[in-house]
Amino acid sequence: MKSAPAPKLKEITVCGWQAVSTLFAQHPQEVKRLFFDAQTGKRAGEFSQQLAQHKKVYRQVEPAELEKISNTKLHGGVVAVIDERPVKKVTREVLAEWSRTRAPLLLLDRVSNANNVGAIVRTAAFFGVKAIIVADHPGQALPGDAAFRVAEGGMEFVDFYRVPALPPFCADLKRTYFLVGTSLRGNQLSPDAVRAQGSPKPPALILGNEEKGIAPEVAAQCDRLVKIPGTDSVESLNVSAAAAVMCWEFFGKR
Image (cartoon, rainbow, N blue to C red):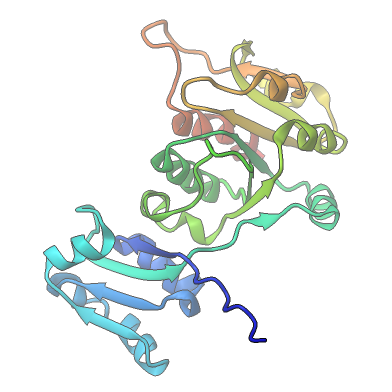
């Protein structure tokens, strides 16, 4: 009996010069096809040569064709096609390595907007956060076309890890990490919070859903809930903006 063929991997389009050039700099072997308009083609010669050496497709096309390939008008004149990257699993070995190196961590609790995920990845890469943990939840957006585009190359430096559910994972993680969640009910973010109240553990930051915030059962696992101070004009920052503030406070001042 013949074995069933392996399922075909979903393809992702990486758009924009910054994202595509960073992809070629970090993971050129992942590029399956490359498309560009006439203007961008003038500086894409090196990319085309790399693909030609491996007998892969590269082609100059009209902007309308680029829009069709990428399914967006925001393609920036260049589109690379790659296979979807598998989300990694958090093993005991991975946890031990994070703890040993005091790796900065970001946890996303049902962040549903792909553009927000991309912006968070860009922030994470800027501040040296190499791991983002999400739950296996239908409301959680994963890296896709929009996230790659908005991350502007940041996706090449950040790995996504998936756990079955955040509450039990947080209960395990807090043995070696100080968990800090964002909440409108939290204490004002302050220098004292940056020091994690004197805890010797490295901080892990948790950001919640755009509308509902962190789930109560996840918040219950946090060692500290913090609120980013501001005026009363609007209730809160967008989750991607909150990620930037939190990463600066906890990781940018190391």
